[in-house]
Each structure stands twice: as C-alpha cells, then as structure tokens.
Image 1 (cartoon, rainbow over the protein chains, first blue to last red):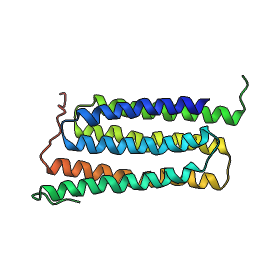
Image 2: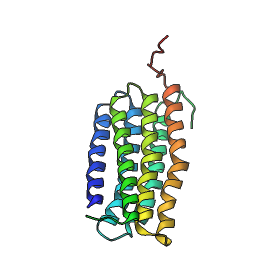
Image 3: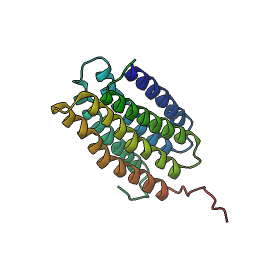
Length: 89
Length: 104
C-alpha cells in the first residue's frame, strides 16, 4: 500500500515539473525539466515493479536512466549545432 | 497494524525520498533563475533516488536484485553532474546571467 502512495506522490511531482517545462522562459529550463521528469519516471518504474510483485522492471529502469542521459546530451548538442557561435560541450 | 522492524525502516526511507523529490520539484517551479533551478534538479537526482532505492533494497533483502538496484544511483551519480554542468555552462555562454541579488 505504501508503494501506491509513493507512486501517486511521484505523479504529482511529474506534473509539477511539467509546469516548468511548459512555462519556462529559456530553452534550458525545458531541457532541465525534461531531464528531471526522466529521472522521476525511472524511479517510478522500479517502484511500480515492487508494487505489483514483479521486480523484473528494475532492468528497464536501469536502461531508462542511461537513455535519459544520452537524450539530454543529444538535445544540448543539437542546440549547439543550431547556433554555431558558441563552442561548448 | 503491526509492522516488522525492517518494513518500518523501509517506510521511513520511502517517506524521506518522497519528501526530497516533492521539494525538489517544488523548487523547480518556485526558484527564479536557471542556475538556481539546476540546484533543485540535483536534489531530485541524488537524495530522492538514493532514499527510494535504499528503501527498495531494504524491502527486498540482499540478493542479485539489490545489485541491479544499487546500479541506478551509481549511474545517476555519474551522469547527473555532467548534465548539470553542461546545461549551466551552455546557459552562461548563451548570455543568461544569474538574477539573484546579494543582500548587504
């Protein structure tokens, strides 16, 4: 029962991050907020696996963390290519 | 309702993780600047995921599953500073300065 409470709190916090992703004035706010949503969902997948007595979902959660990192870096590199005057990453 | 000692410890750790994740995402809404929002996002990545994974490890007992569970905060511990540093460096190079005023 405590796992379902945790899942509902994680859902509330995903929506709170989504507010910043919609409203954020700069693109970096949106990238940061999407990265945080990815982390919360990766934790939520593994909590969901424990809530329904199927702990095999931990593998999917582990994959999700790495793909989240790759996605964030890929979006930042795309943004670098788009305006070429700065030279970072 | 009588809880086992291990379950009680797991529930306390889950509540702490939920508190840190909720406060981190509240800070993502309320803080005024990109550079201060990165701080709030780092709270989710380190303490929130750390406490919730600790709770799952204590709940499930020590087996091969707990090794996979330990790998999640370790990967987050490597990838989260890289992401935060890249976002903040690129935001600073792109012309955004910190808005916070220092009180004298």
